[in-house]
Length: 160
Figure 1: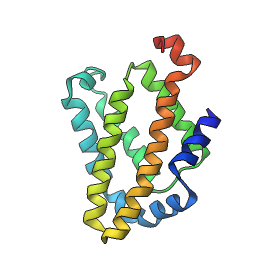
Figure 2: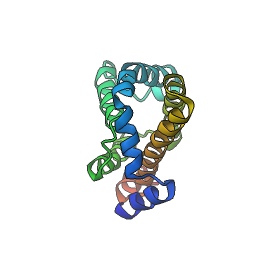
Figure 3: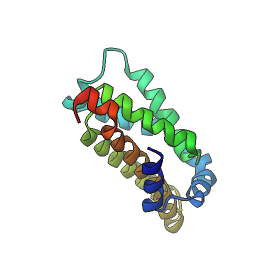
Figure 4: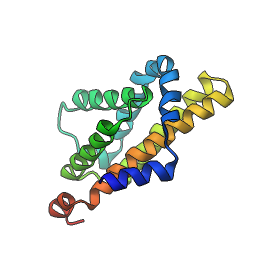
C-alpha cells in the first residue's frame, strides 16, 4: 500500500504546502465541523442504499469518527499515520460492504461543501487555494480507501 500512497500523493500534487494552507485556515474551518458532520450523515441516512448499512443507534459514534477525520484534514494533520488510517477505513468499508461508489459520492459531497464554505468565508484566491489543498488531501484519502478494495483482505471478504 505504501507505493499506492506515494503514487497518489505524487499524482495529485499533494504537498507539505497543502498541509500549511490547511493549518493556516484551521481556526475558521474547524468551526464548520458540526455543519459538515450533519450534512454528511443527513445524506447517508436519507439515501436508502446507505441508510440500510447502519445499525440502530449507531449514528453518534459514526458522527464522532467523521468529525475527527474532518478536524485532522482541515488541521493539516496529514502524516504517514493519517494515510495508514485511511487504509484501515478501506478495510472497515469492505467489512461493512460499503461500495466504492458510495464512498466516492460522499467524498464529492464533502468537497462540494468545503468549496462553498471556503469561497464564502475567504477572498476568492485564498478560498480557491484552500479548497485545492482540501481536494488534493481528500482525493488521496479516497484513492487509498478505493485501493483497499484490491487487497488480499478484500478478495477474501467480498471476492473483489
